Image 1: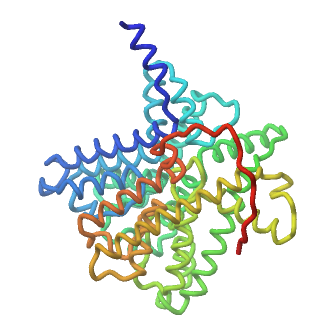
Image 2: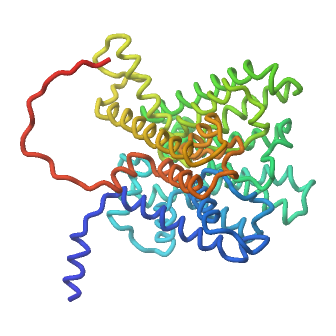
Image 3: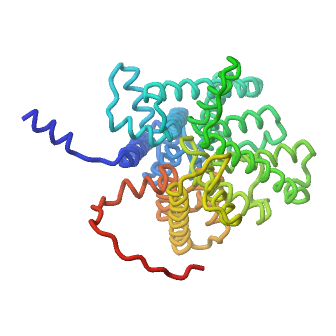
Length: 452
C-alpha cells in the first residue's frame, strides 16, 4: 500500500510554475485569515474583501491599500503585513527552502527546479548555495537600511516605535512593497537627503534581482583579488536598462514639472524629488509628493515606468527590464537591417525575443481586461485614474491617484487578480493554469499573410 502511494506521488506531474502560483495563493489566504482576526485591526473588525486585498497587496509586494496601514491595523496586524511582504518579496519557494535548510532537510528536485526558474538560475550554482546567498544579501541590506532609518527616526519617535518603523520601512523598500506607516507616505521627508537616498538605494538593490547582486558581489571580489571576472549578458542588460530609465525619467520629470508641481520647491528638493519619482515607479510605490498634482505627461511617464518594472528574479514586478531591453535591441537590429539581435558583443537567441514579445502581449491583455471591467463596474471614475491604478497593480508598484479606496467589491477583486498575475508573471500564470496539450505528429504547409 505504501509502495502504491509512493508511485502515485512520483507519477504526479506538475509544472514548476504551478508550485509558484499555488504557493502564492495559499500564502495570500493564510494572510487573509490572520488579518481577519480581531487582534489584527485597531477596531477589531475588517471585511473579508479588504483583508484579502491587503494580504494580496502585501504578498505580491504591491502596496496598494484600501485601509491605512499605520492607523487601521494594530501593531500585530502591521507585523503580519510586514511578514507577508517579506515572504512575498523573497518568494514563497525561497522562504520554504530556507526553513528546510535550517531544519537540515534535503530539497526536492521539483522545488529545486522551481527555485531556479524563479530566480533565473541557469548556472551550476547549487540551490543550497543560492538560498544562502539570497538570505545573506537580504539580511545585510535590510539591516543596513534599518540602521540608517533608525539614526533618523530615533529623535522623532520613541525608541521602540523608531526601531519598528525603521525595520518595517527598510524591509518594505528592499522588497519593493511600498507599504508605509505614514498616511501621506514620505511626503514630509521630501527634502531629507538621508531618508530619500536610503529609500532609493534599497529600492534599486531590491529591483536588480538576486542573481545580478550575486554577480556584482563576485565581480568586485574578483577585482580585489586581481582575478579576471566579467558580467553575464543578463547582468549587463539589466544595468544598462536600469541606468537609462533612471537618468532619462529623472531628467524628463525635472524638466516637465519644474514650473508645475515642483514650482514652490527649493532647488535641492526639485532634484531630490525628480530622482525619487524616477526610482519609485520601478515597483516600489512610495511617494514624496502629491501625485494628483502631476501633469498628464508625467503621469504617462510613470505608467510607462510601472509597466517596465524591475528585473527578473527580483522583488519587483512589471514586464522586467531585460524584456524591455531585448525588445529594444530587436527593434534596433531591424532598423539597421541586421539578421541577429546583438547586445554587448553577444547574440540574443530568437526564441527569447519571441518570449519577450509574448510577455508584453499577455501583459497588455491582462491590463486591457482589467481596465475594461473597472470602467463598466465603477461609476464616476475617469480614464486616467483607472489606467494608472491598473498599471500600478500589474507592475506591483502601489502608487495611486486615490481610486483604490473608492473601489467597490468587484473593483477590489479585479485589482487583486491583476496584482497576483503581475507578481507571478503572465507567462507563469499561463503555464500554471493552462492544460498541457500533446504536440502534433505533423506540420502544416506554410502560407504567407500580409502584415502591417
